[in-house]
Length: 194
Image: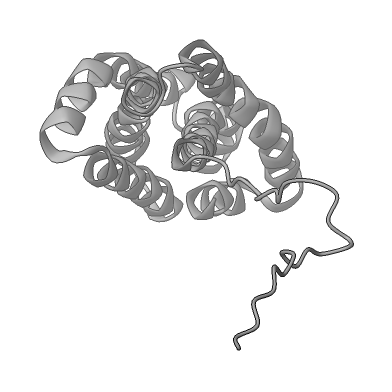
């Protein structure tokens, strides 16, 4: 004779409801965070030359017009580079373009530590930093937003746009303090390392 029993399913007495799993944020939010930090760095580079006008004038005797011309090249390239950077991002991918842009910016800032002539300032800060920061400006923010977000596109666009002002807010007081207490070269190195 075989014995059959109807066993009740075993339950956990501590469980109070359905099992909940912890949801990780979507990978797009990590991409947006990296883009935010990158844009902050680009804004820091773009704002530093304003702090260096007097120290460079005092150290090398360059006219404010020569220094201002280098800053003008930087600002012009910052604005003109964006459409081309967006096309390059479509063709070669965001990572390659952003790594190249960050490399140009870091190289321009580091090379400026050893400059001795005003044409070098125009080349390093005007050309290299202008092209690099222009490649990471609004075109980068728009590309990240359009490729990674659908629902929260407006929010992410606003946050990435605010990164430019946040970079100046964070780095300008720090760099001003470094320039006042340690000179212009450590400020350039600090921004390049950041």
